[in-house]
Length: 143
Image (cartoon, rainbow, N blue to C red; front, side, top):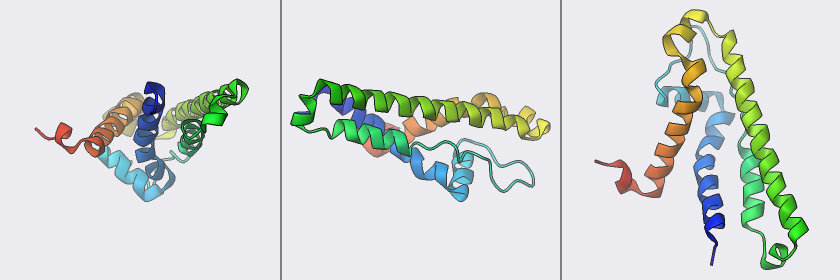
């Protein structure tokens, strides 16, 4: 039987997996922005979120969650796997900060109108949570 932590990690991976494809492909990034209520700046064909790669976090989470019983008896191995997840999350967060800093290169009138540089993370988090809940329990997202 899975522990509470294992279930939480599996659910976190499930939520993050919803982002993976959207961050890799320029057409999907445009749809992601539209889902958050934004259009690309006039004349732009993409917004650079390519550095936001959740794949490493998902890989490390999967390795940790799928550890065998024998693996779990090895404290050093499990500590390393937990550290690997933490480092992958740290790199993802830093990439997010870099992406946010990159918004400064967008036209100032676009930034003033959209506030994307201030609201991106909040809206992205909300969108991922809403999509996760919708996938997890369709009834929870219908009123």
